Image (tube, rainbow, N blue to C red; front, side):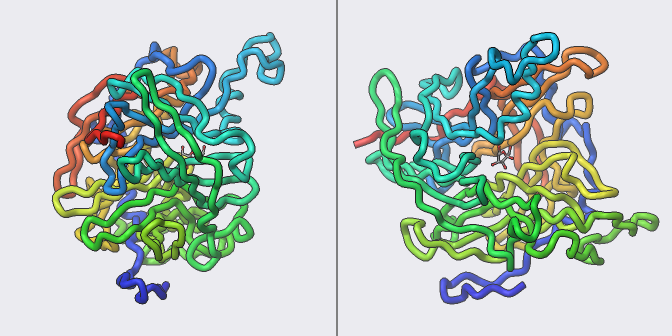
Length: 424
Ligand code: FRU
C-alpha cells in the first residue's frame, strides 16, 4: 500500500500489524489487565434512556475539558421502551434485553453535564430530529475549539451508508446548567474508498466509523483516527506469514481467519478547520486476527503514542481469542511501528465470569478509563442477567513503557476534567 500524501508533508508509512502470534499472548483474567467485577446492583443514569459509548468533551490535544466548571459528556443514547407492546414478552413482561440489543438502529447523540465529573444530569439531544442525514447517529468526538464555546462534533452518520461527518455548535453555560446551541448543519467529510478502506459493496459487514480528531504533538498538524476494515472483497484477504507472526509449531493453521480484517484508519486535514480531509493508509491492521478495532484513540505520554481501540470476543478470528475490552499499541512516532502493549495488546478486558459486563472503554490522558455497563449476571450460573445501558465504574490505570497496570477503581461514570476553560 502506497501513500500519495507527500504533498502534505506526511511521511509514507507501512501499517503496523497486530499478528496472530501477538493475540496468542492474550491472557484473560490477568489481574493487571482485567476490569474489576461490576456488581449487579449498579445505579442507572436514567430510567428513560439507555446510554452506551461515552465521549467526554475535550480539546484537540486530548485533554478532557470542562467549561465554566461544568463537565460535559456526549453519549450514544436510545429510548427505553418498558411500556411498548413491541418489547413485551409472552408473559407481558418488558423484554429489556431485546430493547437493548435493538438500540444501535435508533442511536442518537445526547449530552449530559455535571459539577463534579459524575452524577450526570441529562441535557438532551445535541441535534434536533431531522438534522442528521441518516437514521443512526453513531460514535465520534466532541471538540471544544475555543473560549467562545464553539464545539465541532465529529461523528458517524449511518444507514444508509456510513459517512464521517461533523456539525458545529456552541456550548452555553449558566449557574444552573449547560445547553448546546447550533448543531444545525451536518457536513459530510468522507466515506470508505474501497482502495485502502473496505466499502459496503465489498463487504456487507464492513465497519467505517468512530472519528477521533487530534493535533499531533510533534508536527502540530490536524489528523483523525477512525475504525475501518482493510479494503478488498470479503474473503479475498490473505493471512500470510506477516499476519501470522512467529507462532509455535501446531499454530500455523489460520482457518477462516481471512474474514477478519479490522484496521485503525487515519486521515490528515488539508485545512486548519478540519473541513477537508485526505485518508491515509491504516496505522494498524488486524487481518486474520480480529474484525473490529472500534473507537480508536490516543494518549500522548512520555513522548510516545499510545493507541487504544476496543474490540470483542465475537469478532476474533478462528484460533485466537480474547475478552471484550480495550486493547493498546505503542510507537515512538505517529506512523509507527506500533507494538502491542503487554505483549498481546490486551489492556483492560472483562473478567471471564462476566464477559459482557462493560464495553466501549475510553482511556483518558490522566489514566482513567471510562466504559458503559452492558449486562451483569445476577445468579451464579450466569443465565439471569441485568442489562445496564449506563455508566460503569471508572478504572484507574498506569501506563509505563510497553506495559499497563490496573491500579484503582472509582465511582460510576467518574470523568473528571483535566482542564477548565472559562468562556468569554
Ligand atoms: C461501539 C460501537 C461503535 C459504534 C456504536 C454503534 O460500542 O459499536 O463502534 O459507533 O457502538 O452503536
